[in-house]
Length: 252
Image (cartoon, rainbow, N blue to C red):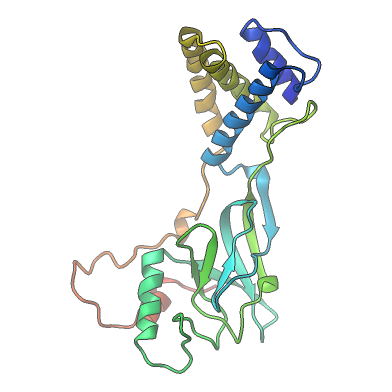
């Protein structure tokens, strides 16, 4: 369905006048806002399979960080091509608390190849994490990090429809879910008819459950999530977190 079709079917459902263009009336423009609201909710809920793409990270602000592009909703994996090796190697994801322990351990080591951020400055990255969902921190680099040397499998944020012929950037089979949710919101917010909105909400919920089978949330794959030293039971750890990492995370 195009945006114009969704808007007109919504206007028809709430007994309003249909339009030739989504910008024709104040009410049709408000329906467009509702469609975009519905899609934003769906985009936030799922990383859609068709949005997978290869790309690179952006420039960072410190020795061991790079930025996530603004259009990215999630990262599945990161590879890095080293300064001295022509081969791309996988960089393993670790949880933030593990990464922090690794960095602190290095800062306390006194080794000359550890920079002020706790990153090794003479070897290609092995591990990455993020604390803020916008910046990627790496545990090491060889002389300098280069964004051009990163290859990432991204989940992009789909675009929002705004013109008559635009279609929601989700599989066509799920456009009806967008329509039902838009009608629900239109009854409740434009007409103040909660009873009618509730009827469409039930239909929307059924369609939404069906949609969940297609669009599972995918961020860090489960096989990349590792236990973060869960069995120390509060005892102080005096070993090397680099050795722990090398033991837990087997490099390919």
